[in-house]
Image: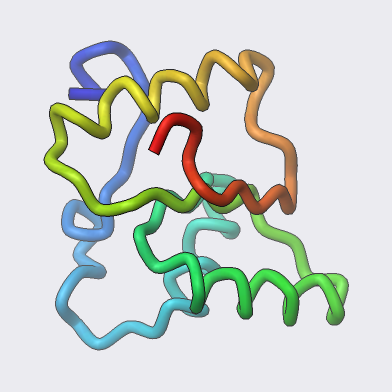
Length: 101
């Protein structure tokens, strides 16, 4: 639904990285390498990783955490994040919970 609205989205599944036992940290590293914000339902693990990266002065393109909901319910929440940051998501920002979740 985001792609249909012109957003450049890459899902782990589409990148061939889903269901392959790739660690959360490696998923974040992949997203950071591509300059992409990580959207996740796993706030606890990604918060820990973000803190560890900050301590090592390692950077990511941002992390947005949400509760798991059907795609149609997620769409307005994702669109709000894009509206909050029209110039792009701030580097290293960890947003919990996703606005309106």
